Length: 197
Image (cartoon, rainbow, N blue to C red):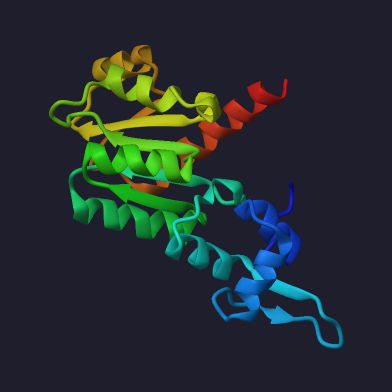
């Protein structure tokens, strides 16, 4: 799926949500799922953003939906920082970002959104880098997940230790979001290259 589609047919929505096409037509006709009809035909079209909103509202897992954006899970106890990075990543890089402030949230979101990239503060109490890599890599689709560790004043030696624990990259806080985006893009390019070869 090279080109990311912005509008879907009822058949495509049915596949993504794992339901029969007529169920999608019912959602559509009852006004639960917003979209429009092609003029002069019975065909319904559903814009991706309406589908995402619908799926979130109804707790349908989004992993069937490939919007083409890179999904990032940001796990950091500092809510303000999470918010700032999220805005920058979504605005600047067109990423889809989910933020988590606790291990519990991070675990739940990792299952739900199936992130391509996990950015995590490695100084969290009761969470070790090895635990994080094991958790992130434990899911079938997770081999290619890019795991980036962050910490205030992270030294190169500590960064190397993270790499040995299975991290793909690291950044010392405070970091510039641009450098995070560059790191993500660089790591993902390498991951894709090795996945395709």
